[in-house]
Image 1: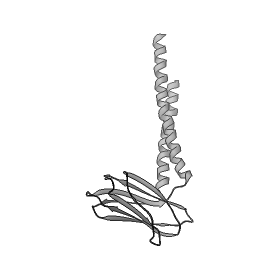
Image 2: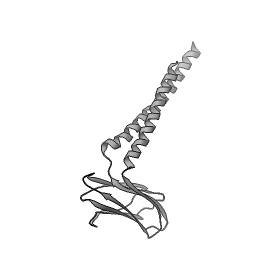
Image 3: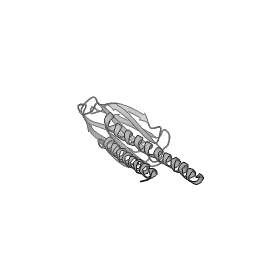
Image 4: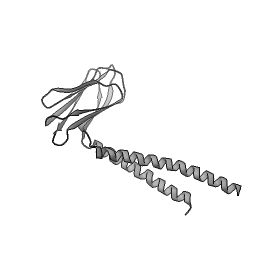
Length: 169
């Protein structure tokens, strides 16, 4: 087998492994989230409720993805099982993620309000913050994918140099 073909097989394997690990890491990170998708009319709100227990995880996380971003128009609040507001903020970008401490066991509620003038599609999730091992699977997959893509560039340079040498000989 020629060297470029062997390198191409190795790089192709790295890219494939990187893609698989990236998708698997994403799946692991989102498996413990309660996710809700809704078109939110102006002046209306949506709620996402999840049962959380500090013995399972001490940190919670919520994430919001907006289809149409308008500045200062989407407001998010998170309430603990006793009804106390533990987080409150106005969304300042299309994709937002915030962490919060899980102090007691019970139903945590996230309320999203649309103060804008247009209907907005919102995807919201709330649940346990994934641990570092779970997050590292996706990061390692991404790094392997980058190494594979750099390897493709190296193969191209190697092949071009060898063709020039063959033409000059």
